[in-house]
Image (cartoon, rainbow, N blue to C red; front, side, top):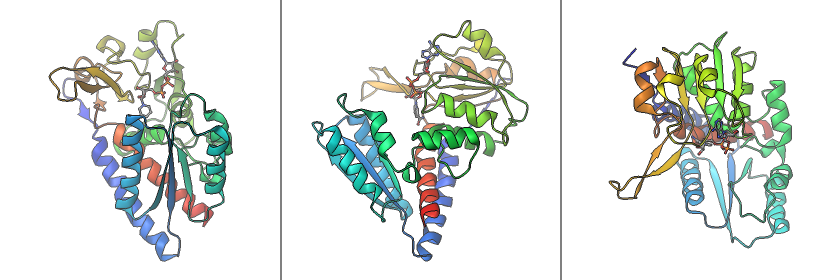
Length: 292
Ligand code: NAD
């Protein structure tokens, strides 16, 4: 197995965005202009880039967007007031507060204050419960939803497959595991994490291996069963003096080492990354549809 299929996240994301553009137009014909509010507290450069591309993508699809940039000193109460205003704004169907907020902000309390019907990140406890209950009216966190879409459009069989997810965060690892084990997927799922014993042996069981850790090039070829499908969620900056920026992006999987051994693999960049924003747009349209 030395020519793996490279799963092209950019192409799949572009197809999802085309569907979103068509759905936004159809909603407008029914008198509903979908709207997304993105709140940024402080001036973290990476967060600014993410917020900028979310707002830009809305513009490209005909989705109304509101970018709310607040100073780093914004208090918890001031931020809660903004969230409450957006909860009551009929022009806004989706709300997200860009993570991470400054350290003095209690992020969990902010997430809980968002109307769950507008929680397009899928982080509110009501949406976490709906995911566990397999209730399709809930919002699925964008990154794991994007991973599932990549598996689906690549024709990868999850039914009865052994899946291993490395990472147990509420943003990627846990929701990913719930999606894989759900009745419309039917994988047998193991969640591994920082306290797991003999991680390479656990990973070697996987027909589908999802890495969501945040450690550059951690997964090596001898962790991977021949013919496995590898989904690399990690986005890590590593120093690279040959680059103008001084760094390059790498995943949690040692791509050069692992790729020859697998049936299919996502590259970094260009794999899972582009899917996250596409699924955010999809969630915003779902919110607009459901709120009417
Ligand atoms: P996190 O830090 O919240 O969680 C990391 C998880 O990895 C934890 O559950 C921890 O138990 C586990 N872990 C840490 N060290 C480990 C080790 N040595 N062995 C096994 N498990 C270990 O991170 P996150 O928010 O889930 O993100 C994970 C990675 O995915 C990061 O690189 C992040 O940048 C990336 N990410 C990418 C996207 C995207 O759009 N592609 C979105 C979100 C996160």
